[in-house]
Length: 512
Image 1 (cartoon, rainbow, N blue to C red):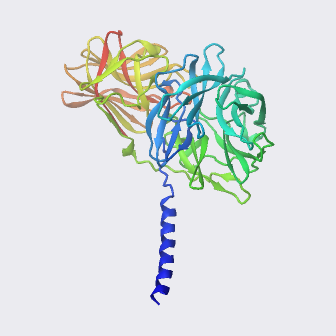
Image 2 (tube, rainbow, N blue to C red):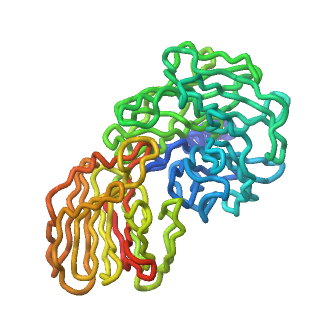
Image 3 (tube, rainbow, N blue to C red):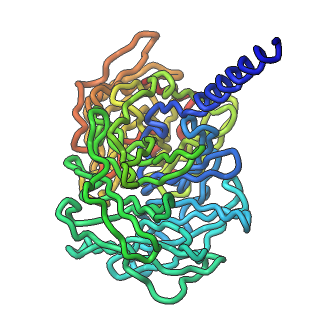
């Protein structure tokens, strides 16, 4: 009798345990999972960890490697090019795509860059034994006259390795085919002839398709891809999907495309990568937060994929903004070295030291006469950016909001900031090497705290703590005109002056 009672109870217990395990495996998403300007994100899983990367544009170190156990909480653990650009490349460092070859035990990082010699946008690749190891550049693989961008690696139904990419025809008013071509296992050479998978031939796609990513399910190859305009203030980026039984086609586009459009929290979503987790598929893509918009940049958003009855993947516009502002705060006193989140212009070889007294950043007149820049992304619209600085009579040291001279593609850096040199504090704006002083005050000797208070993403108020009292410096400034094309603002430490001098930063604090 007792045995008959125990068996049903045991069955109920096992059912409850299975339900609990299944429930515990559900991913509780807190977007943005990659806050700040993280365009064109890529995502892979190696063992128990996930690794991601994103576009760097003109900021070195190039192509950060993020690490996570849950796809929600990430940390920077490496860069593909920690010392700066490969010798052959000059700018436009876009769209990294990570790939793990389990048989070789190697990581490959495809990326886009512009060739110094030909001036063409090129697809290249670097390799490493681990995502956290040292990458070796293997150089360009393809550089068509119109430009080659947005690489993605996959295998066909026969196990052959292929490289996919977009021909950048929209830059010349032409179509933008997605090409596929076999590549050798060493990822050093393309083989045979290229095959066009599909191009922008539907009205909703506008003047381009790009950012293709392949995954397999239900006996199909699925290709997610982006269309329309990605990056300007009036962007209209969307995501579509196509599928095929064979990698080389024929490809069928979903008749209900686009599968992803703007929602209440995110706009212009696209250029993502799909990964599988416990039988479910998730897409990591970039989008502008509807409140943060272009002032923050395109942030990394994670969303679960759902399926129609006829086996089409869809993204039902459920991504929201869950990130708590306090988790975005940043404090650095430089006593443990330079935090890996800091970046600098790829065109400059910066010099610095750190010690118990803080950061000593070598001064210069580089970067369109802004000086040496050490920056990180903004992550929200409203924040306070402050630094305690030890004044120097030779170097001008301060804080700046760094953007572009205009909102055009490839515009040179420009900015507005507050700096101190000797006993003079100055609020300034610098565009196209022309500097305008907006306010200036004399300060007492000793360390000084400088503050930039930002509201709504573009309203800037400079402040300084003088003799223990907070003082407003100049009038509130509108910095909308400095928003760069395709990137959010950067928060910069600036050291301007002769190279034998340096800016001394005791500490930095960003509060969102």
